[in-house]
Each structure stands twice: as C-alpha cells, then as structure tokens.
Image (cartoon, protein in one colour):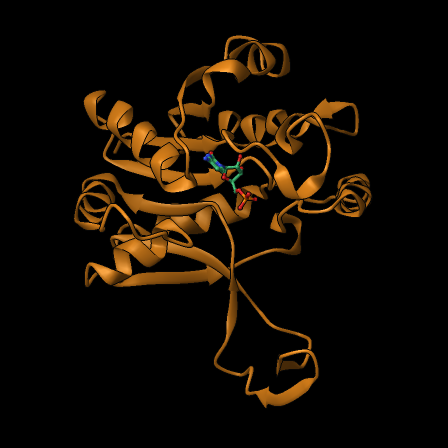
Length: 221
Ligand code: C5P
C-alpha cells in the first residue's frame, strides 16, 4: 500500500478570535500544524504528508514546516479535503489519513490501529465515549439523551482513497458535511471505529492550547 496523511489547515480560525489562524499558533514553541506533521512524517506506515492551506498561508506553512508539501484549500473543509484527495489520487496513493491541523497531538498507536483497520474496512475513525450527561437544551434544560450509544468522533480518519474520492463525488455540492467518515457512511460503506484519545481533541478555544501543552509535557506515546 501507499499511504498518505492529508492535513487540512486552510481554515481562517474565526471562532478562536486571533489574527493568526489557530493552526499556526505556537504550542510548546512550534506551530500547531508542525506537531501533527511530525507525527505522520515520523510514522513508518505513512509514505507522504500533504498539507492543505489557503494560498496566502503558503509562506506561513513554509516557515512552520520547512519543505512541507502543500496544495490549495477551498472555502469549506470539505473542499479542502477534496483538493488534497485529487493531488494524492493523481500520485497513485491508495490509502489516506485525513487529519485536522487543529488536532496537534497524534499518538502513533492511533495511526497503527487506523492503518490496520483498513485491511478489513474501507474507512476507520477514532472515537471516544461521552463522559458527561448529555441533554437537550433550548435556553433551559430539556430531557437527557441516552449517551451509551453515542461517541465523539475525532481525526485522523483513515480511508481507502478510491472509496473516499467516490464519496466526495457523490456528495451534493450544496450540502455541508461534518466530516469525511459521514460522507463515506452516507455512500453505504462500513466505517470501523477504533479507540480515540483525549490527546486528539481539537484546539477550538485559547484555553485548549494550555491543556494541549500539559498533555504534551506528560505524553507517553
Ligand atoms: O474550523 P474547524 O476547527 O472545524 O476546522 C477543522 C479543520 O479543517 C482545521 O484544521 C481547519 O484548518 C480545516 N479547514 C480547511 N479548510 C476550510 C475550513 C477548515 O482546511 N475551508
């Protein structure tokens, strides 16, 4: 197999409220995107890493990860992934791990498990059980939603490349997709789940950076 990691980093980071998009903010002295890039580049099952950024972020990526391969993203995450998939398909890769740059800490055991799952399934995602009580709310508290059947879905998400390309092609252009695994599932394919990690939690708010630095300081992966 030829397996690529596709890191989507073309977001503008609107929710974070910072001038610099969050994927370029420093975490333990290195830009966020550099952490995930290093995790994939250093993994024996990953043959190439491609980063998707906005055209105007090219210089920032070069500074963050000198020599990193990149291509242009789109207006939505879905378009950014599709652009990257087109590049990788043309280069003959047959497996891809799609990953958010906003999730800097990627345990190598997660990559191991995802790659292994692709031997039997066209897609695989890391998931974590939900610890908190879940409830509906609409200004005031509503009824509890049973959480035993619910999981949090993270990235990286691993796919047989041809299947994910087909799922993207079949997806309605005007519909938004929460992630790639949902698109594959909607196309009728089985997506396996593997055990996720709190290290993979997305950096969404400034306080998440401090949490990630603490996790990194104590990391044993
Ligand atoms: O904004 P959110 O955290 O959901 O974005 C998830 C990931 O998708 C981020 O790494 C972001 O940079 C990326 N993204 C992208 N192209 C877009 C929007 C988001 O690559 N147009």
